Image (cartoon, rainbow, N blue to C red):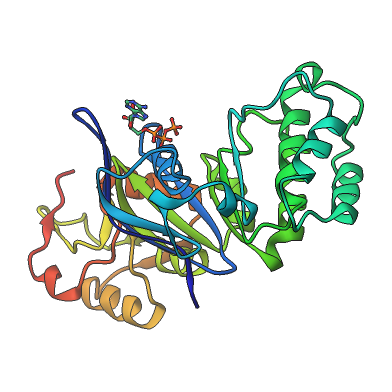
Length: 313
Ligand SMILES: Nc1ncnc2c1ncn2[C@@H]1O[C@H](COP(=O)(O)OP(=O)(O)OP(=O)(O)O)[C@@H](O)[C@H]1O
C-alpha cells in the first residue's frame, strides 16, 4: 500500500526549541491516522510542515508523492485541511463561503455539498462571524469535504466542541473515509480509539511509536501477579514491563509486548508458585499514560531482557 504521507528524519527547530526531532512517519493510503501527544509535543508543527506552512529544518516530507516544500495551490485541490483555529472570511455567509470555494475546486461535488449542508444543519444565510465555534467548524468541514479530497488533514478538529457536534463531524468524516486518507491530531484518546485505524505518539518532537490501532491495543496488557510470599527485592524487571510496582505479595505492571502464548510462558517461568496471574486489556488512554510515564514505547527485543532493571518500590 502506498504511503500518502511519508517523512524521513524530519526535524524542525524554532531557535533553540526542537519541535520535531528526526520523525520517520508513513501514513498508508486509506488510513484514519491519529497523531497524539501532550501539549507542545510537535503535532501542529508536523502538520504545518506537511502543509508547507513551515519548512523542515532538515530531513524531508512528501504528501501525496509531492515534496512538502513544493506543496502549493493546485495540490490543495486534493487536500482538505482544517485547523483548530481555522481562519475564515468572517464577513461571508455560509452560502457565500461555499459559492466562493466552489470556483477553486474542479472536483467540487454539488450533490455532496447539499448533503453536507443538510447533515451539518448549516444556516446558509448566517454570517460566519455570527456563528458558534461548532457551527464554524461544521462549515469548515463541509467546504473541505465537498471536493472529495484524497487526503484530509485535521489539526485538533474536535477540541472544545460539544459531544453532539463532535459526533456529527466524526460521522461526516467517516462517511468520506472509504475514498480518502485522514490524518488528524487529537488529545481525545477515548474518541480516536473508536474510529482511527492507526495511531502515532509524539513526545518532545520524537515519534515514539506509529502503528495500527489493533496491534497497539493487542500488545499492551495490565498484569497483576499474586504470589504466595512477599515480592522479593530487588526484583528483576524485563525492559518491556512498564510501571512495575509491588505491594506485599502483589506485583503489578504493564506488559508492552504481550502475545498470549509467549507471555504466558514467560510469566509461568518467572512466577512458578504464583497464586494468581490476572491479565487485563487496556484502553488507549491507559496505554498512553503508561508509555508517557515510563518514557518507553517500543517493544524491546528479548535479548535486551538479559539486563533487567531493578524494581525500586
Ligand atoms: N512559531 C513558533 N515559534 C516558536 N516556537 C514554536 C512555534 N510553533 C511551535 N513552537 C514550539 O514548538 C514546540 C511544539 O509545538 P506544537 O504547537 O507543534 O505542539 P503541539 O503538539 O501541537 O501542542 P498542542 O497540543 O498544545 O497544540 C513547542 O515547544 C512550541 O512552543
